Image (cartoon, rainbow, N blue to C red; front, side):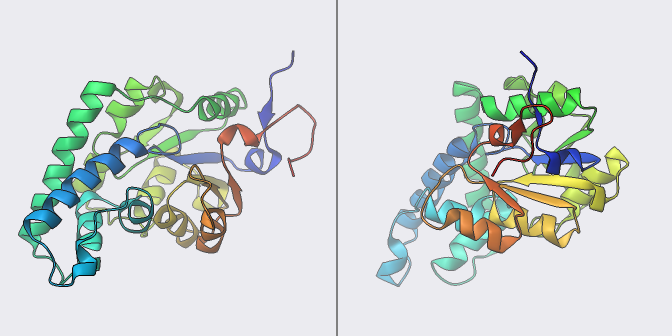
Length: 252
């Protein structure tokens, strides 16, 4: 049987930059669980004056709106500000550090797994000779990709450690993706970006990337439309949907 090939819209791009959590690896649930534990503990210890602000962190809606795709500090600040006055740097840092501790504990206990459909597409892109970069605000990106058996598929990886060293601003600023394209040696207009977070899709569009693919893992009400509004050209529930039989046209 002939192996499937990437969708023609991806084949038209000279390189592909992929977010990691929620796109390549199934670690978004670990991040969401760690955020929930850290935020809920903070809300119990420091209940907001407004009773409505005391409700627990929603690991789906609040995660997608406030923290998905952002750096730890930016995500912590965004959520805490949604429940009361703008938090102090010390408060933001403490909550972010607790989230980091909880996530690391869960990662070392359960390990990371790659989405099978994502691995299939990445391997098809490599067979086609398409340069690939992984981009993540997480300092654990390389560890996560290696644990999932996916690190070797990428020609470059820009992670949270690189972002801190280079002082790259977080999403929705496109700096992380622009650095990834730079390391591949391809202008942004010749690169596709694959993202599951609204902030990441917005960043890719701001960066002038030639194709923006949104991954809608939640398939919740309105989530695909939200990704399109943020700038996604294509939205799929799984990256295997971007594989086609040789010489076939793009999927509908």
